[in-house]
Image (cartoon, rainbow, N blue to C red; front, side, top):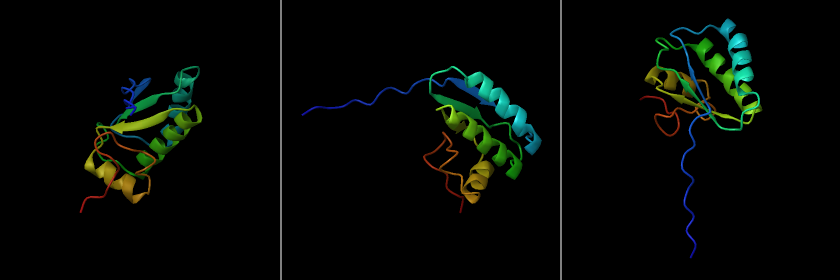
Length: 112
């Protein structure tokens, strides 16, 4: 019987840290910066540290979704880390829990 060992996790190719407030207008410049940073890199995982988002709102979710779209077009995955319960709840409410996974748990589930 052959046993297949899982590959060790690869280090992220890029780490993004969001500021405490993110407006919808920030999406364009942030996406362009991400695109330029990922150009020419091998596929991998982009970690997006969202701990500073004090009061996440739908604008922040929209920006995160657009950043994820840019990364996926360049064959990269995005993993949110340090997400607050409020952000997890908002992602679940928006139906984006599977698209914008958090590294804190497997899947995003609303609080009860």
